[in-house]
Length: 249
Ligand SMILES: Nc1ncnc2c1ncn2[C@@H]1O[C@H](COP(=O)(O)OP(=O)(O)OP(=O)(O)O)[C@@H](O)[C@H]1O
Image 1: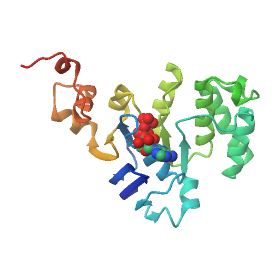
Image 2: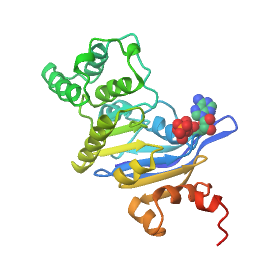
Image 3: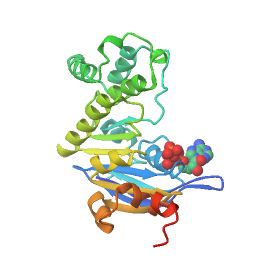
Image 4: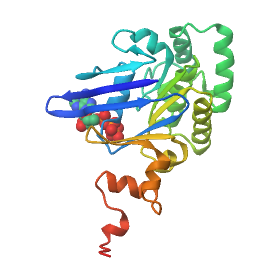
């Protein structure tokens, strides 16, 4: 279980996160939604120790993140929102690096690589440099690297973006299966259809504040005849098309 207790992050005058309180449980797919700049990546980067919140505490499996960073990092597979790391390495070199960072046995590395490179159609590209890849191929390379060690906690910042429909489908299936196996899947997305299809629980952020936390089912039940898209747009301050067209009812 992951607990965020009173997390705030300030950049000068900007409050990127404002007193965020959340509990993220195993066995669920947990999604972060919010407009550009709402604080999704700031939350995710705080969880994976890239940035340090200005205030608050993160607890992972009863351990304080500030006191157990390495043990906690070993449990996490992280996919950043920009897959532009190590562009001069080949995909195979990058995966070797990730396998070494997690002290994977050679056989475990080979088995995992065979599975993922076949699944993501990357086997024939593994000796090419990451810099020569398309956005989607870079994304696949980073996803494979993040999942090589079979981490219990997946934290994926806009992982679907840029993937072709087959890879997106396969990744969503993997996320579902990982959660169904009792593990943790956290991701951010702008794709409301994906959120509706995949998430068990949601956190919707607006300007650094949590404006909804709960199940997708409960959110949809609040307005039974509306889609997640129109509910989201209403909550985040935008009107749906019908309202924008001046239906004064
Ligand atoms: N390094 C930084 N320096 C200053 N401000 C920052 C920095 N990183 C983020 N911010 C600000 O913090 C706020 C939250 O940004 P964040 O990247 O978390 O949003 P996001 O929800 O992930 O947005 P997007 O959907 O565009 O990826 C924004 O106002 C952003 O400008």
